[in-house]
Image (cartoon, rainbow, N blue to C red; front, top):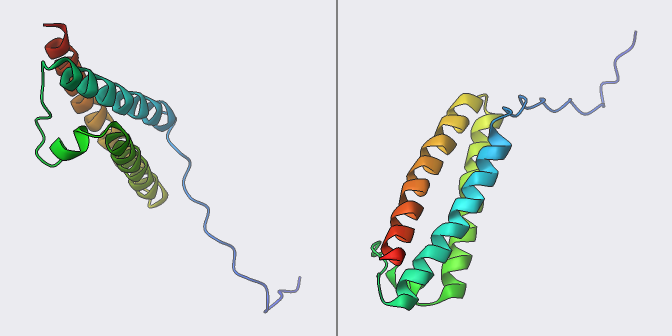
Length: 116
């Protein structure tokens, strides 16, 4: 058997993606959409204001709020994928479970305010 000294080294194969991650990512994306919708509904109905001072100015512009949420959502998913590739797939799953739980509570609160 001969070895070609000029051959490029094989790239390491990243660990398999935990089965829970894709549905957690999808849920996170949906929750971000619901957060935007419920926030804008509350603001336009006059029943609510954006509670996060960092987002208050953005909430005045739906396009800016949507762009910000899309960017941060993509960044969160990219960071979890980086965790997974670095052999921390379980940590990525727990991060997504925590974030989804937090945003589910935020969305539920937002819609409760809009329904009043």
